[in-house]
Amino acid sequence: MDKDNPSCPAAPDWGQAAAMTLTVADRGGKHVLIGDGIIDATLPDRLKSAIDGDERIEEVWLKSRGGDARAGNRAGRVIRSYPGMATRIPAGWTCFSSCNFVFMGGDRRFVDPGGIFMVHMFTHTSDRDAIDLSVEEGSDQTVQLIGEIEQSSALLASEDNDFLIRMGISRKLLTEIMYQQQAVATAGNRSTRYCLNQDEVRKYNVMPLEKPAG
Image (cartoon, rainbow, N blue to C red; front, side):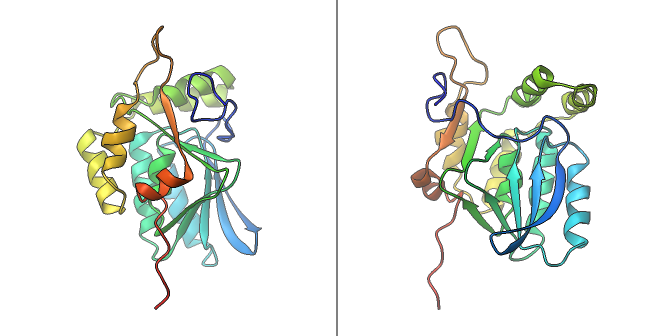
């Protein structure tokens, strides 16, 4: 585990350090759309085109370190516009930062055992974690993308709250978890992230309990 963020893995698999790719695949008997990479301003439109282009898509699988916060919100709303569309974080994959809001768009949501729903405090200026991590790994393409992310306005707290309510998430996820994290690491405390366990994803309705048949 991460010594500075002990609820989280030390080496999360949060996808490629480039703009999110959208790939259709058959996995585990399901026809799914895999989102892998950084969320940029073009994602909501690309996501809608991908789902419109294949009526067989049942689920959207996600691994991402985040990116453009406002685009993450919009992408989540795109997914919610398709009744019955599910989102999933498979075992071993991590959905961090603005990826949380894409994931929350699912009509049904699944965090598989071993899947990581990782949150932090939104700074409301830009998604610094995604930017810094991508620059560390970066290619010219990544650096260009990060410039675009820095120019994008982050979600306001009221928009965060409104989105969670609309998606059926407990607002306590913000007050008890997200907003309790430090925005910036300090010399005395380098913890800035938190990974929800299986009990917590149910407690905050990140993964809704299955409704009984009938």
